[in-house]
Length: 166
Image (cartoon, rainbow, N blue to C red; front, side):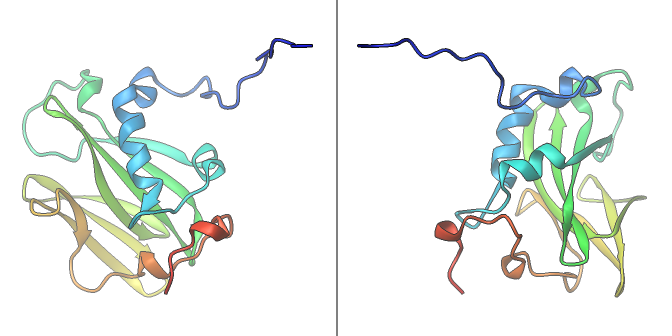
């Protein structure tokens, strides 16, 4: 006997506060990039459902303030290693890309620009760290010594079979 499967419930839903530009497909594709790190899953899907999101204009230049296609998104992921990974999604008229990560307890957006993007700063127990956009990497990287090595952070929900070897 065969029985038709019934699909009556959603696995994930956006909250009513999530703006349409924040749940657009181009943003979803960039999110898939930060869910992985160096070829391995880094975040479980639950980490994304618990993430908080904010928007900012990180790129330099004139833009229409009401054009949501030019809002960059910053995802504040759950606590790890004494701070948070802030995952960056850069959006412009030229497209949407993953913009890298920064780490700290708090994230500050400065008025300084390097390579056409605002410098970001994080605070943490060891002080303050600055991050700038790198054209070569096409994303943000630490100016100086990074406060953490993302390769050594082991999140509690990592899948054992996918754990990168040391």
